[in-house]
Length: 287
Image (cartoon, rainbow, N blue to C red; front, side, top):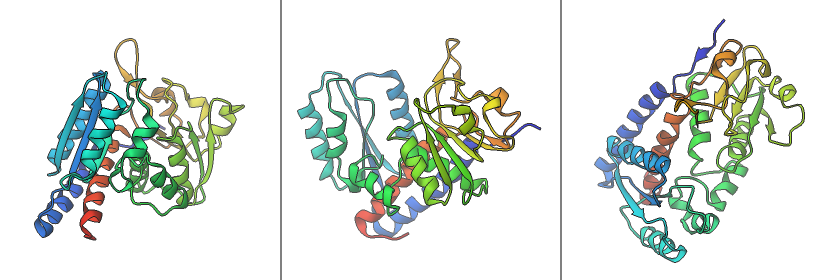
């Protein structure tokens, strides 16, 4: 039997409508409009698309949004100075520097320069530490989006065997922590994992974030498993695909996210949620 398709686009629309309503309520009560500043350095085409989508989503949610475009040869000093200016701007509650940065810039130093209370990507060491202990203000947007999908679909995590394929600081590691906080039994796999398929076939919930097109195939998953595909790859024919071979896996899984239209729409949605949270915390509102 074919798997149930988890419609991330639809879930994102519902969630964004709720965020927009809460943002409007905050503005009505306090006069404060949640504000997001996005800095983009250079002319990476994919990054430009992501930034445009973030700005559009902010505006649709009734939030203030500004995009700061800086040339590819921007110096570390100039970038830091721009972040410094945004730190003291009361209209800006969230600061995001679009990654990846040009090779000559120090990403770690840039992330560390963003105040934790305005770090809506949740990449700052303070925020990653808070996620580790389970007492956080913000969550990284993609892992948070995955959790929202599971919640919306009524998928129980507690007591389930959860496998995360990928160990990046942006997705894999925080995803594992969130599943652990939800009382899942979590295994993290990576390029050095031996007999990967033996591990993935144990998973009741399988989250794949490795950046390899169609890497996970139907024979690598447990019948009836929930398969969450975080990957976004462009094939030679220009079509988008995930890290999961959808055709074979959808015949075995109980539920699965498509690419596009699965996790992707949720990532920007959770950025909006973080920006709203940052604005509420800045003015002490608990809405």
